[in-house]
Length: 132
Image (cartoon, rainbow, N blue to C red):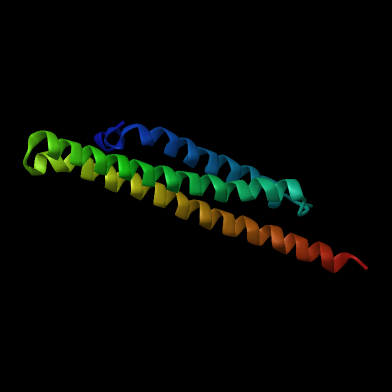
């Protein structure tokens, strides 16, 4: 991977796992909800709500990575006894990348959840309309 991948430190792994789970749960839910004859069952609803939960986990991991980046920056400044841009840059880069990737994952998860939730509710409404 590139230098930006490495700059996110350890938090890149849990955030990447969260993003992968969001994509997998989204695809699984979409396959269940958009197939012909789909029904709004509660199991599918639970899977699609998992999209939102994992998106929030990615966001929280991004915030944690940002906090770690700030701590590393202040440790570098403390050790050097002076502020130099080369000391601040790696920590600032970690802060921005982690919070950005976490927020992007959450945004993607919320959008995906909204689309899937809308489909689930439309299926639910259609089912209610067909009942006598």
